[in-house]
Length: 286
Image (cartoon, rainbow, N blue to C red; front, side, top):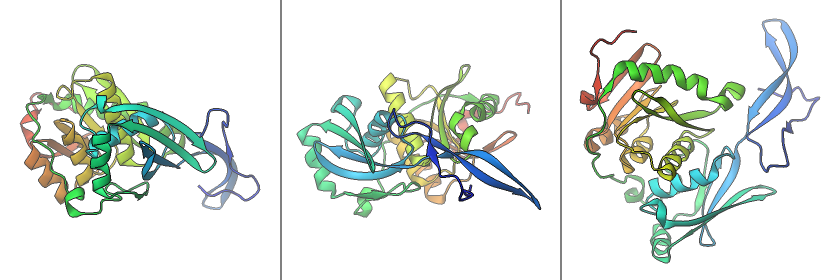
């Protein structure tokens, strides 16, 4: 929302590093009616991931849960193969952004150097910095088994996610990625201005806490593009539901890897694009 020019946008907190949102006085118009209001605005901050002292990529992200983001990104980008290969992570607040210094094995670092990737990733970028087609279009291993989910459980989680997105309730401008388990509802949720970042944060959290990735499903409050499917399948998640549409490439990858892909998942509807056997509609009542 536009600032009225009289009050500068002020961060809510400078003591704890970069804030996730700011507050500003704005002008609100409804027809010819005008009023001044306090508005909450989500922040996006340059976050540099530095591996063994070597800068790799800068992503624009919401400055929360960055250790989980770094772990999730490192796994889903194939930089490391399991969480134990991330030896340490330290966060440094700088005047113009945040640096996350990650320590990985020299073998992994050499593999990373061979990728030739050292670029800036925009907020909406999922394949930023990939220098070859092979890097961009990576094929995860097929996912195995997975849950059988009553559609009523999906409906329940879709209703719950709106209440669980605290930052989005304030700002209206961040994506969410949630982990839900049948009979338990949403157990984990992460938010970010970037949909890929939100999913990486969630994956980092799931890996750090040792969740069984075949026992639940992921909901994302965005479209389901190829790289979202790639990230989910890369770690063995077997079902992903998006509130918006998937792309053709996403559908093909989900079909090839065995992942159940659901689009247009909203309060009273959903479309199953691949591997529908995991979603049952017996006694499904809206």
